[in-house]
Amino acid sequence: MSRFTKSLPIEIVEKIIDNAPDGQTFIACSLVCKEWLFRCRFYLFQRISLRAGDAGDVLPFLSGPTQYKAGAFTHSLIVTESNPELLSNQKNSRETGRKLVSALPNVREIQMFGVTEWALERYLDGFILRDLRNRENKGNEARDPVLLEDLTLSDVKVEDWKAVQERLTRCSDSLKCLRISSLHFIAGSADPSIREKQATERLQTTLDSAITDEPHKSNRQPVDDFVELERLTPSQASFTNIERLALEGEHGGSRFANSLLQEIAPTPTSPLPKLTVLELFFPLPSHTQVLFCAAGETINELTIHCNTFVTAVDASNQSRVKMDFRHLKALTRFSVVGIRVFPSATASQVFGGFLSGLKSYMYSKLKILHLSYKAGLGQSPHTIDQWNELDEVLSSPHLTTSLQSLELNGIMSIASQMSRYLPNARERRIIRLIS
Image 1 (cartoon, rainbow, N blue to C red):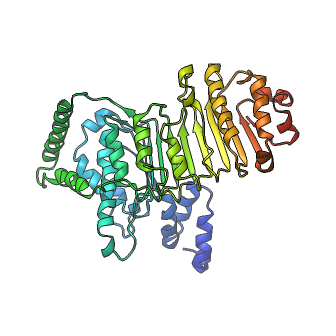
Image 2 (image 1 turned 135 degrees about the vertical axis):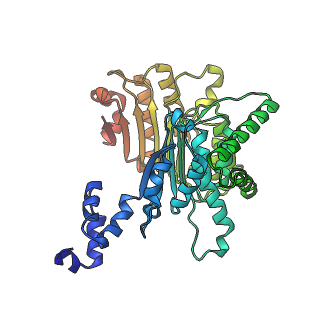
Image 3 (image 1 turned 135 degrees about the horizontal axis):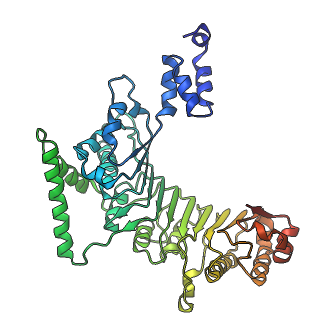
């Protein structure tokens, strides 16, 4: 270590490292001396990404013999899917999963992309069990226990949506951010007796693999974990700490989405004092209004995703496409994203639902409206009458005083027509065209 670096106060060293622009700079700083290395570890190992089945390869690195183990600095774990053949050949997979949980004691965020039940059982369930044990022993700990606060499940493939909901119930009271996108439910047998038999066979397979993989260790551990999860599971969910909730990629008739919203807000008076950011899919789930009533005083950002809306709703079900958000008294930003220009019927129904909600909204706090379209090849997604109707609604007194920006994304090709489509909004200079 040079005299210069040795003479620097630790506060200056921390400032230098904290303002490093990228990973390569952190690596360079970590090689300066031991004092610099410790601070760099907070950034180098703060987030770890691995494929399902690769935990055994990274365990020696996370829980090595050094005094400051890398896993102790990790707050975020990202798990992606592996080749199914790799998973089927994986040795000691359950014990490896337990060791991974032990090696990452400070993980607060888990993101899982494209994984199957295999990864949920070995990774997510382990951290959930850690949290349940921490809560049970909370009175005996000198400091507050580390709990799972941020959970993302995207493109996850599971057999039963209820299994996902049970996991969310187990960690509900600590979650601050929950993102669920495009879950794939592989339907099992409709006969309950057959499904029970299949579940028993899967459990027996699990036990057999545990005995085969670990002949010199107790083969009761998988059963013990399962029993303890059941014992410590709360009787009902409590999402009182949730701050951000995102449900994307589902369809209007999604049983899972409606059931989850019922768990989060069983009644219009359910306590959700911290929920400020909400993202849902279009058409809105049937239980949405109850959620809006429960969190109407706190939600300030609402985003509606239209990616999965590819078929127009028939005339007899027009009520499904309404976006009724009149209960959201604190709303400052409202976004509708992923609007498909083709077929035109879907774009018209999304626009109509958006307009109907805007007409019934009577509060003067809305500052930003954001509409995002998928490529339309230079064609306007709506008729001139529809644009003019939007312009008229935006000219309402309560919106005139509060609205600062109308953001239009993906329709730059019709920018020259804005004077005809939205004359009043253009005159007020609130239109923002985004390419």
